[in-house]
Length: 247
Image (cartoon, rainbow, N blue to C red):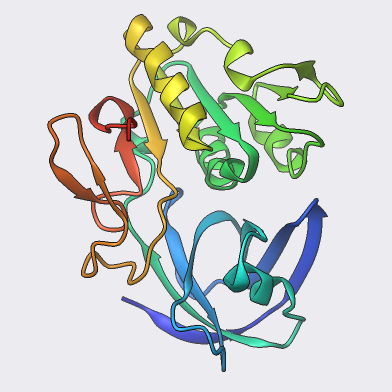
């Protein structure tokens, strides 16, 4: 498991409490994998698990939202500051298995791991369609444009795109596969729609993590048979039909 000290290249706000953090790319990750990030000298015990957003040349970009002490600490970092970067970790999107029409569905900060998926599908000669949902002002949707056949946006406030939920933007029956990441209720709704249409769907879970390697079981979820699954080790990408989204 690679773990190195790297220096921040850039750390810019791209939305309300949302930042894009750029770091040197020392390894080649797969779309859908994640890293553990921790500022050097931090008084906080645990690193933060952040999905890879994109890799361009020798630069990794991570998109994150400030929701607590750990992400607030990341937001305060400036170019040249050091952090420990551990990864890439977990299993990514099964892009090599996908053919036909593919749809990407993202909600809020959950759009992050879909950017690299869009680029990879485009490079495979199969640009996807993309539907993104936001509570209010959209953010960081521009990077999808070069790689997607179509891009549709929904906002609950109606400030941009179609007013309403992202699930109102598409019919999964028109697709051969769906990739999804976002708030748990949104992913559950997408999976339920895909079950009705019989469309294969993969979800990227964003469970809280501690170790990132499957040892501590903090990130455990359950499948439809009640079996425990480690999000960091067996995921974060799972077949949507396998996951139990109910409390």
